[in-house]
Length: 117
Length: 115
Image (tube, rainbow over all chains, first blue to last red; front, side, top):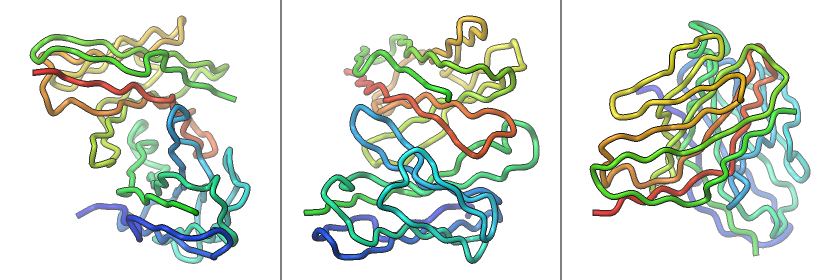
């Protein structure tokens, strides 16, 4: 089954304790992204990657790191989490090639609810 | 930068009736894609319908259709014969062709279908 997986689904942590949210896709997609969803703001892009070892900042990258060492994996790292990073996080991927609109359709993971106290 | 605006934070509709969700966007691009995503209480993001800007014909998917007005930069979603399972948050999204992988989302409209 074609899918994007994220772990963990729920996480409660304390300020300053480093954490990693994993993301993996099995569709051989070139592009992967991380978004955060906050009430009244919709989804905002944190970081994205166009291929292995190629990453770039999105709209809200402060306080986050990413890496893309393998095509299928794109972990999100919070080295020193703060309460303002409490949010719902989504990983997404899309092909980047193929029939026009299909190249741009985002496939989303199930989301990770993060609470930082 | 592109922006997407959904001016209706919440809407409700009676079961079996029709409802229209509004979306406007701002861009200087000519070639782009528009999407509506549904987010039920499970939080999963589900693609409902998409529109390619170069196509004049409005997209339809079963009970879901769009009214795409390129000059007005408007992309509304019409849900016909509303069902209880349509209760969800709906997000309008924009992505430019050949862009840097940056999908822009509106703030969302929470739709409640009442029995």
